[in-house]
Image (cartoon, rainbow, N blue to C red; front, side, top):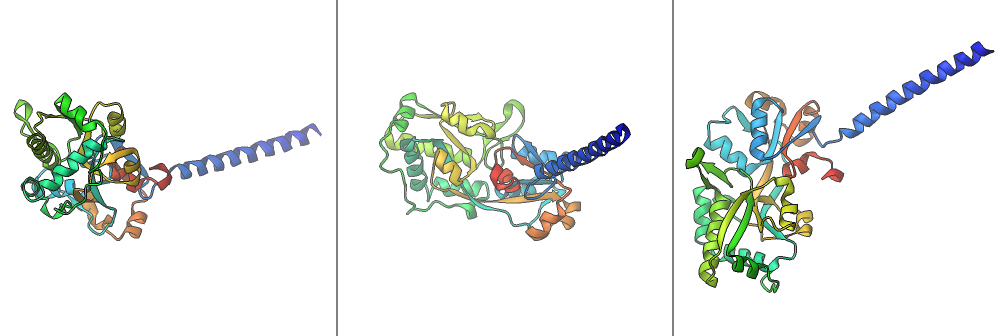
Length: 301
């Protein structure tokens, strides 16, 4: 009898162990429910994503087309890599962000962009090869034109506008090396032109200060007042419009997948086939970026 009970208990233990193993295996599968790729690697900037791809940390990088165009076409650094042009990801629009409620400040930014549409806006874009991506027009409506809060007055009184950015050519990057490096880029030059216009128009003496930020902390930095604006090729999304005060769209962009030229033949397919082919691929993105949202499942964005 004891032997029978022992046998039964042993069988039950084996069954329970097998059940636990299967259940755990199922949980592992559920954890990996990205839209494509077996693993998602998050880094602190889009340039880090490209460099990670180059180092072999990942098989595919997802970044902005604006940046991809610059590095793929204007430098030798990533000559062995290419955009997977058959993989259709999101089309987007860039906006500038202030703290939620700072509508008067954003009204002034919008006003300047519209006023400069036929001058500095186009000139700066031509400098960085982005003329076809421009979105602001002379008849663009400023949605915050009637704002009455004190956010612009506070900036004017402080005589300083603090702009958060990440290194992201041709939007913002260092031209040169070491102490001789100069911060340049489409957004950098455009921000300077906007502040110059506002100082001339409103007889203010605002100086612009650029601060490198952790992109994943941009909302918190706006909220606690560490920066006045995020001006760095930020994709406009409903969530960001709900949580921040966002400018009129000023530049068009897409999310693109990049791989080495040796892997391009394998991965450069229409989206559905691309998803299947990347089942064993590691994807690298900037944390908190629009590229990350293209890989994560919708409930984790």
